Length: 433
Image (cartoon, rainbow, N blue to C red):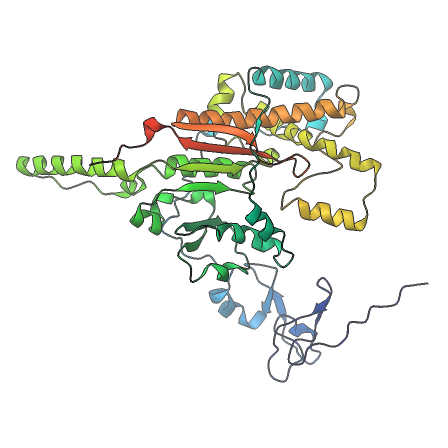
């Protein structure tokens, strides 16, 4: 016997009569006078002979065909003018095309001998590295009480943390727009709260107006910087922020007399001292590392470290794939089918990460008889550690004291490693008297 059709009820008076099946409710848009449906769902009107087509800029919404040109001029998905802090590929990294790795086959297509050679390489390269990280799990009772308040939704957690400090300028960097539901909580406060909608790959911090004018110390905090985004962020904080980006586009100065040259030389000397004082290193870096399978040799900051231990782009590619083995302990989920409620909890707990609980990279007959689940997990952790150590050496070579530690228990998250860095005393400019 077929289940009865669900009763949808009636639309709210003055609102669109279209029932959105995915959201299990009626559309909340306001239709035009005399119409039952809004512009987006106008094709539902039997008497409406105007054709709606997908927007060429964003097919997620539609537009009347006879109003397409007018819509394209005001569509929110149209290309907008680049902000002043946009510098194409400033943090991209690799520019030598010869080093870009060629196409590689999946791990499941490798022979047992090839797979064994990769495992030998990762063990040899990680020999001598600190395998046991310290636990630095910090918490505070007041913060826990706020976060455990059922009235505060998940989207408000980050904002609650930010509200516990005063006289701080918050700059949130993101590629895509969000709903900004909790941004209003930061108004009428001493702190400045600003969003920069730009890919980190093209972000020049030196040109962000508030940093350019106020010369504020910067602390970089990263969450959900999956894979290559971590490397882009490190290069943005360590290289592009301290580089004099403005000097790249300056025109050559006109010729001057000898007397003028002396004055210019003294002025340049003073300007250089001023620039050294202004170009202070980032005061601190804190990044929760995750999604090593999304790392890219093109953007990776630890390429020199990999080369120093005899590894290259091909090995890096396979190590990023094998890093997913670190979470293959979740394979035990195959022995217990989760309930719908448990499945929803697991989905929410990923926090936007593409965690695979049942099937991971390399699940094939190739691994049968070579590695147990525990051995795969160990190899995956070594791959993650090797990739992260390349980042540590990158920071150390640029005058930072960098370290890795656990910031939460593995029962809370398997992605529980935190990268921290502060400038060494030798790279901090001495205060002028």
